[in-house]
Length: 527
Image (cartoon, rainbow, N blue to C red):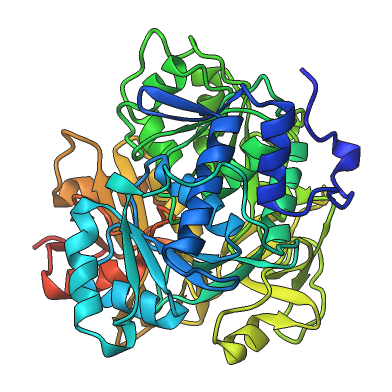
């Protein structure tokens, strides 16, 4: 198979600098090839190009959308999500992805903060949208489109003439907002084109591949999968949602060769009952952010494809990756090395580079990179300094040159003068087959300042009692320094999550405070 972008081409600037021009090119050179697949239907590049052109004209002629206007999309995973995204970009608008599960407060904040002029939604959410708009004088002029009838049919299939370049703003991409209201990353057309190109070079996908995405489209991952599909001329399968029990069956049914997962998804997939048909698939490769170290080799063995780490964030796109032909990293926890267009450093608090093996903050420089945070100059100045973006992640540079994460700067427990990286403790706990997921937080302590508390989600059938808590902590304790071993354990049936499938620890702690469960002090002797 010929890759769409060869590794030695990754650093080259793209000749086509906008997603809309890339779509137009695919509609010309691969008109009848499949582009998007949802449910039992599929659409070619030519069909999506025509549909998005009609929609763009409707947005301009009916809704009065002008270049730079913000168009909010509040939809679950349906084919209309990427269609309206590309149509809005053709109209010169800036798209505001909105989490489809948002309620009144979050929705009103995003619409007001972004200055949206139009909301695209569906029947299930139209009532909520109408209520929010009616209750705010500031939002009184915002228009609404229900996807049940997008009104595009009468319009021409040729794209409107709008001045759009690589530097044109494409998205106000709101971050997950785990520490208060979210901030919107200003992402350009060039950001998405370069991201698709870098991911194509890293994966080696071509037009014979089949891609799949299942994360919410309001998050950036399905969007970069669209950019990757446009770059490679390959079809993208869109699932309505992630379901661990049906995911691999969908991979087999659709002939998927590449997908990306993150967070708890690998663990949830692996803990599904093994099936005789597990290796009866067309998978060539899997990208993941957060492969459980202890499961890495087993994940590859079970489904017969290499899994490799990729690191990035909304602000930066893709920064680090591990080549699929590098088998030495399996089970090592390495994130690999920088992509061709990025530089990385690991810094001490004083801004100096730390020695190999010493933890420091990971900082990133290069392209793609956000322009800054929308309406947040202070936050932008705090994270972007002298061209370097400060990720907030703690990392070490390995002796082999790779980068390995050890936690978040703020996701630490300070126990009696010792720093405990929550991610390290979580990894040790999740290596136990009885544990589906773990979240470690700081618990105030009069003597030590903070103690280590673990929230654990157990596999079906495992009893949620003190003996289980003691056994799991004891097993993890064999891998951890004594001061890192959790003192407290609370069992939960699930975790509140951000749109990116990461555990929302602020929401978890708030839930535990509002409705306390049974907390086991595993160091206290029984009476």
